[in-house]
Image (cartoon, rainbow, N blue to C red; front, side, top):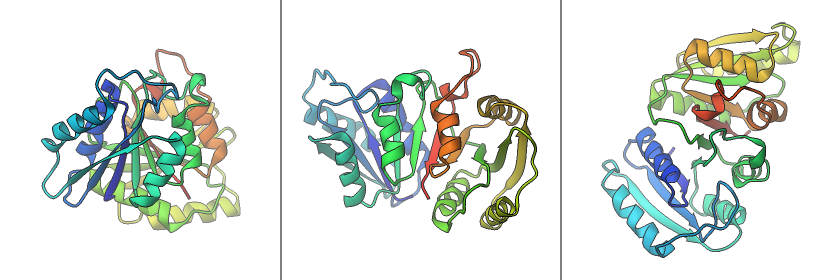
Length: 268
């Protein structure tokens, strides 16, 4: 990934997200686009009160981030003043963005209040990989990554290539997790799709798993705890899994993977 778009609202959470983006992308040639939509909070969709002039704030952030960038990297400020999603779509197209990295202010990043928010809109309306950094996440290089699937749709090379590159760059282990309420027996179509993933990930460390007789939330939380998962990957095309895992959490406040596990959303 060479072109990284980071929406900011100049909050502490935005700063933490920017640091995570820089930490995960240290190679030369990466271009970081610091995106600000005038007086609009991308996490809540509400107007943002900013004491300092936005242009000055953006310039100040770029100067601080310049001290943290790696050799051969570039930071580019982007300031827009129109509809947030339209602006984001334009920024993605104009700058050949490979990845959007964004945060949220909420402890549970997919709680009900976010159903109409820009976080959800970016995931569902922009055809670009999105890395969502939760508020309580302490930035670190992931070692255990889990890809959730039910093998119910045909995969393509482009999204699996995104996952491949991410795993190679972070030197992580990829766990492919099937969530099932009845068992792990696969139909012919599901087996074909699983075989495609096996072939796609043949040259990275990976393993296949399944969890039965639990809700999707419970199954994922169980796997996160057992495998000490650092990051979750979802195919945006798999609406059933996305809706259940991202937008309909039913976990207790004490144990909730949404609070401190980043999500990488990959589009087919």
